[in-house]
Image 1 (tube, rainbow, N blue to C red):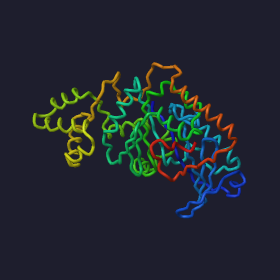
Image 2 (cartoon, rainbow, N blue to C red):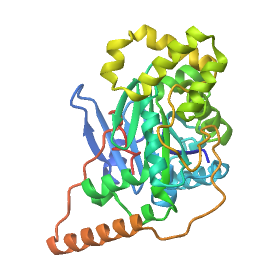
Image 3 (cartoon, rainbow, N blue to C red):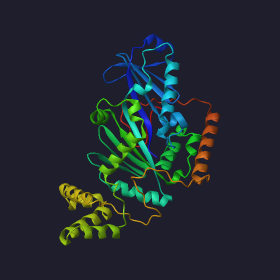
Image 4 (tube, rainbow, N blue to C red):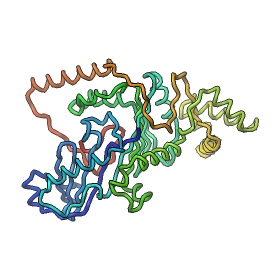
Length: 369
């Protein structure tokens, strides 16, 4: 299922600063340029007001609705989210009639996502290793133990193990892990794909058609995800080595096939330094372009998997698994220990406010909540 995690949107309006201060809004001074703004966190919704007349909101739809972003939200019900947010806005500004409804705010950032399901943890790791080897067009790639990120100034692709992301937070920021994080079934086997589109890309591709009601649509989000998947090249299925080499032999003449097979074998089995030393960047790009033109994925599966993933299929598996897994037990124990430690120490841990101006890195930030 295609869904949305974080969304950021703004509207133009004039709000009395004294009203904000009286109602608990906090002042923020930007160290770089000295500009002043005001912010307020209303549970999972983070509001900002800039005195030159901009009211901004940033939040995780999934955390707002479920209390966790481990689930996916059906965008057919996006109208419900809009109604709930409108209710919160009216509660914050009961006497202001100049604020337009949330559906007409301009979207300046959106994080699209989908989950891909493997049969077991071994298959998940196999696919993640394959996804790390792909080249992501016009993006800088960063590889992690259980994931990969490719990004530039306006877009970011994050592909990672969702269960390991929750484990990371449990170990490093336990206060961010909730009971709801345990509520999704079969989470150990999920590969999460996120496509974060920021203001520059939204404005370039969609001009002025960036209202919240325009972007919170299943067809809009699905088309955007499908496009980035095709551009990245894993709409072509990951095959086994024997299958990949056989396809190359059928598609090309002997000499070209021999060169491509030598390259693709090195590309999959040799370290990156070796590949860069043997093949100039231009040659690598040329070989990859040729293979993509024939719908051949340059990365082959190093190990046998129970089920091959079709990355163009966003449907959830029909078979549900209601088993309370060892992973969930582990996290529940960690949460209980954390609660006991907090009660014993009897102190309040300071909350660090994430800046809306900084770019997210991997899974360390997920939307204002």
